[in-house]
Image 1: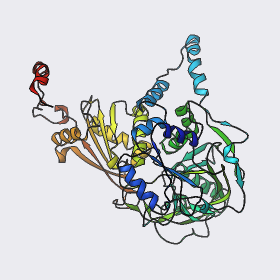
Image 2 (image 1 turned 90 degrees about the vertical axis):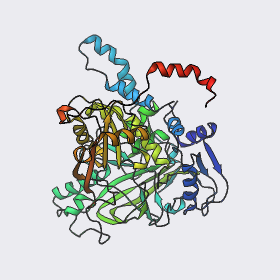
Image 3 (image 1 turned 180 degrees about the horizontal axis):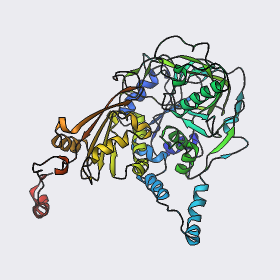
Image 4 (image 1 turned 120 degrees about the horizontal axis):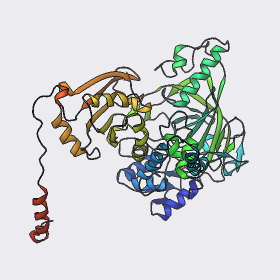
Length: 513
């Protein structure tokens, strides 16, 4: 059954032998990161720090998703493909053709109805309500790396509302702590929260206030300069609510690249097979998870950007300072003795790598809706998600590998993929050794590598311009005569089955390992 909250999840980790409680005094400034980095890179457990310098009585949970087993535990499956199979089953439902078909669909429709979030009167996140005399500095928020600009909230569930449709969105964006009452809001331009912000800017301009600058509409186009936008940008506020310390399904749902019209709380309900309970905020018109440990309520001002960063990022390098919106907190609610849930990113492998692999497995069926010839994909952890995607396809016509490259570059956040390698369906994309052997043997570099220009990830420090640069696709499939390849294609070396069977019968006698 679904985990009730973060504390239920912590108990489950403890029962499974996947949690280490640390009573030694540790500083949230750098020390927690160094300890966690060593543990995560050695395949160690989730960590619950219980003696934090400057924060008596506080606890910090970190590395909760930091292994394949813990990701399975978080989503309550034996393997992640079970979730993909459930998604596939829903997608395979055909439109009913008659009364009997409609009757047959009723159980599935009833099951889907169970996943929708429901609003309740109150919840544990309201045990303590602070409209004044509150401070972010009361929480053991980490400074992760030496050159970081300060402390950063790294695992928040940030709720915004589409100003046109009223639909909620929940995303995970890092938040630099500026002072007791304000943070940065790291809305990269492709994020849904950033689009909500831009739409509010456009609406303010249409309403007759002075037109915003192109820099403001673009949100992150300016890479340097002052801390506040020009005076003629529109004035107004955008409501934001931030939940910290949610159950694992909600936390995971905030980081997945969900289809635009599918709310993250619905995804969380689907993953946990139980609806998410929400409560109304105190000072903004938004709903948040009732069982969260900490809730931050407030506004992003439309007329304000401020320098954010540097920040030690998942690429293994520091993302440099840039201008981002500022989140001003109007109210903090939390549970009694709240547990602060966080993560660190840096040189892989780290906790976020396992979260990325879960996204890869679970969303493969959704990718196949657009690219039906997909057999499998691999986002190697060392490729930090957006630098390399290996794709196997069932090849049916000439040029199909290049069609698949362009299809991937048209898919949501996959558009930022810097390098795509396409191989045939008989190549195991999860085996990097096999991919390396076959891909490098199969390509003529001049013929099989193509380059294109387009949007790139904001964290790509090598691109020619911020957010814009080149991408590479490699067609490592077998080449056909219809693709202009007229030479014979050699067979792969394989021993015949009869000889292998004969050696199998003698193996024990041979005394070889």
